[in-house]
Length: 238
Ligand code: ADP
Image (cartoon, rainbow, N blue to C red; front, side):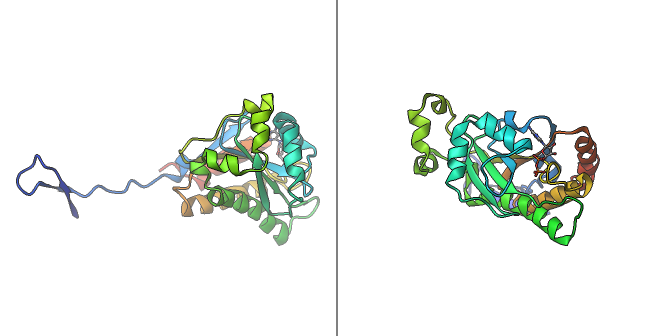
């Protein structure tokens, strides 16, 4: 067993104490993920992910729910983003949502056909959404970042936006994913869940200290059953 030495003035001339080296406590990947069934727009997390369309200007399904709950300023900000390609992700503020940010990603349309390309694009949605965690340093997001954003003034000048919480937490980041592409875009639920879990697992493994928690937010009973069964396989609790 390797030993370690720590300085302690109360312990003799040398001020040293022998002991066992503190072991790095391995982080269980299962501690980093949660399954939640319900409406993503009520989650008080750092960011929720939106299964958007390529215009980023709102639509049906979860996208419509998010825009409705966030209020018109989300549309205004999305309007400045010039759309988003399939598999990519863009970030905005959360406005009237309890979540601080919304990460908009565009899943592949898979109606009737799920090939290699669609699977890869769906995986990229999860990867690129997670990559924004690191890129924007959201785990220690501070007021500076907010002041830097062009739309910051709206938060202060408009009464309702003024209610928006300032993102000053320095704890690691928590984000929530809906089941991207499995609604209107028609990606079959089971392979979509496999891709979501596999991609998130690989990313969390590599970036274990960058993220506090990834929440898989399912809306339908079918998805809840699928994720419940698969999560214990992808993220065993041992
Ligand atoms: P896509 O166009 O990518 O298929 P949809 O919005 O049609 O996106 O569906 C994606 C997933 O979001 C589906 O599983 C759907 O059941 C789910 N969903 C719809 N509304 C909500 C909501 N308010 N919160 C969480 N998930 C939702």
